[in-house]
Length: 244
Image (cartoon, rainbow, N blue to C red; front, side, top):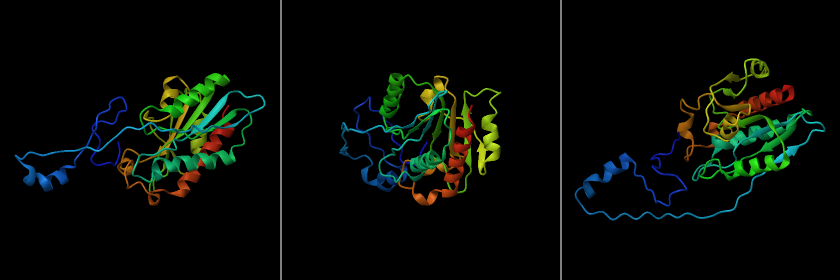
């Protein structure tokens, strides 16, 4: 699920287990030097507690029907620019936030923190915020790894019924937007499993090559098409402004 090579066998904060991985091509270059010999291996690693913050920007309606959440995770893996995953999503979210005109729903703009790491504190903080405020989420739009050069903007829905035509109408009226298939490895998952209507926006080639650039040094700005970001933001505005 990423371009990181070699990939970690264990990446879980539940376990304080040092992990090192050696690429098979690298091993092939040293195999004759270590075959049938005693090898001493040291893994220099540590776990540290850090402090981070979860930002929530809210636009309140006078008589809200509910709350629409537009989100994109703002964190990235180490040793990567994170241009596709997920600076592209954050920029799309901010573009959309500037142009939304709807005044019948509360609008929450949420750049989720810690999506890429163990223990999704950003989600938990936001869920606690919703609980304390008594707000119900009517629609959540999650933007994750969008605008890969050469792709289209894919849109997938979860928990919509066959009579919900607003999504189809928005897709057909916005350039560069196509229907996609839902997936659940993201910040929308906890809401989707709870029955909330969710819209997922991502690069149409995410699983056909785009992922090979993510979570590693290859994820740079030259992979991002700004026009696709604007297309995605335009779609979000259209959907939110016409959502009933």
